[in-house]
Length: 235
Image 1 (cartoon, rainbow, N blue to C red):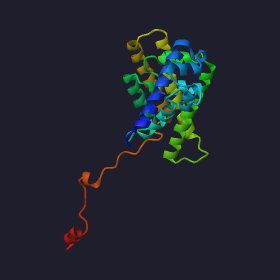
Image 2: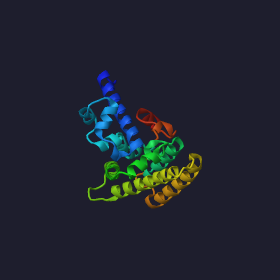
Image 3: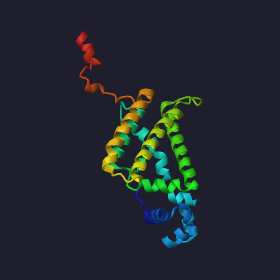
Image 4: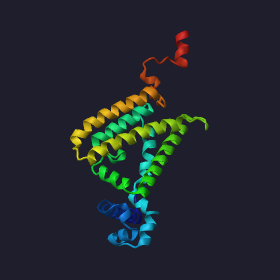
C-alpha cells in the first residue's frame, strides 16, 4: 500500500526528532540531555516528542522494532538447504562487507557503544532489547520447527547464536574505539567470525536446516507415461 501524505509527514517528523536527539546524545551524553532540550532543538513540544516516543530511552533506540525482528528475519529468509547457523554466518559476513548497522559494524558504532556504556539506563535498555531479540528468534525457531512447549532447544540455539554475533560486534566496536582503521579490523573480524560460526556449527550442526527445494517431476527426465498411454503399451 502506498504511503499517504499524512503517514509520510509523521514518519519524517519522527525521524527528524530521533536524529536531533542522537546528535545531542553524542555531543553531551545520554544522561545530560533532557526531553525538553530535544523538543526545543526539534522545534516541537514535549508532548509531540512523547507522541512518537514513549520514553527518553526510545529516542535513543529509535529502530528497536527493526532490531528485534532482524534475527527472526534471517531465520525466515534462509536459503533452501541452509541451516540456521549457516544463515547467520552468511548474514554476518555480508554485514562485514557492507559495514551494516544491524550488527553494530557501521561507522560510529564505537561512539554508540560508548554512549550506552556511560548510561546505566541505556545499559538496561540494551539488555532488554537483547532479551527481546533472543525471545523473538526462539519463538520463530519453535514455530518453524514445531517443537514442544517444554523443549528448550529453540531458546538455547537463539542464545548461542545471538551471543556470538553480539560478541563479534563488540570486538569490532572496541577496536574502532581504540582508533584502529576498518581496513585493519575487517580481516581480523572476518577470521574471528568464521571461527565463531565454525564452533557453533560443530555443536549445532544441521539444526533447523531448511529442506532443499523440491525438483518437479518434469525436471528429472524419468516421467512414466500415465493413463491411456500406459494402457496402450500393454495391449
